[in-house]
Length: 269
Length: 155
Image (cartoon, rainbow over all chains, first blue to last red; front, top):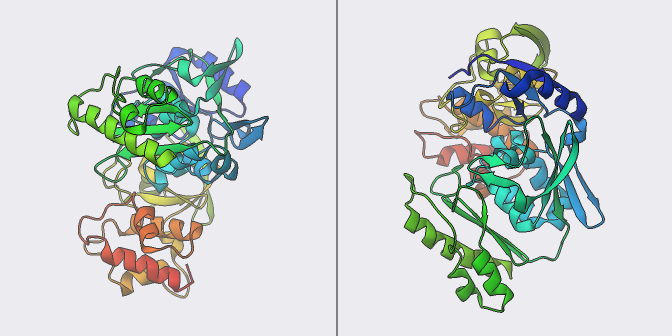
């Protein structure tokens, strides 16, 4: 399968990317690792007229720690996040989740910023960053914004990113001693989660239980009020809105959410 | 059309290509290197695996344009003047193939795996080849081959 024709431009800097996006107008799309966008273009689910490649902007790569916060350049690959000593020490949940995305080849290309901007509700990194209580930085013609991850996911494959904005960095708290757990249930190698659960220091985020990654708020509240793991996990699916697909129906997903939340919390102690 | 500058198997090239040209089609149709197969064409099966700056990637999901300025290694690039690459030799010795369609991608994924982890356990080999499907062998001899190449210490 070959994508519909488009123009490819490579941005040298974030400012360059913003200018190129502005010139190209609303038919432009940002390309990072391309491991969500290119398959969609091959299937004609997307047909942008211009691709602005941001993957080789030096400022968008790397991991830094400052004043209790880890900042990861948006074009840092899943493999690099998983291997980063800073992430492994200060946000081990994120390193673990990054190491479970797809397969090794996909992790060599896919990027953390791309995964968050794509906002697939079944994906690994959106729930991991949500459970960590992170944030993203975006830059556009009107300047930079810092958006808490709780306000970032707006709908099915929709985010708070505005047209022409570039997601430049992902921030997570550096908490080496936080208790964390991660559960991903899939039937085949390199599938998306049928349901996934990320738990970190009392926050619980669910994958594939709604149109966006969602917090298991009732279970979090139960834990905060001193409930045991069994009791808290029993309310993990409260307030969620899972769908049916060929892998599982909604009721099965609700059961999985409760079981996997229990396992994630047991693993997190 | 746009120009791409890609070093393929150690040789610098410059080609005019369409922006939408996939790396696997660039390698097969522009460079004439036909070892790399197109299998599923959906980033699943791994038949099209090549090394991009030394890291294994699925070339059906990379644009030739994205590879411009970088180095690509295909199965043809593993050949040595003194014979097969140790991973190729191990696939032959352990009979790590049946129909052979997945083999170029499997070998390239294995070379990439061994570059990161020179002596992987059986579980690490199985997880490291998670992105490559073989519909014939049941994987046992493939895993043996990668372990043999690793313990040979020459990969």
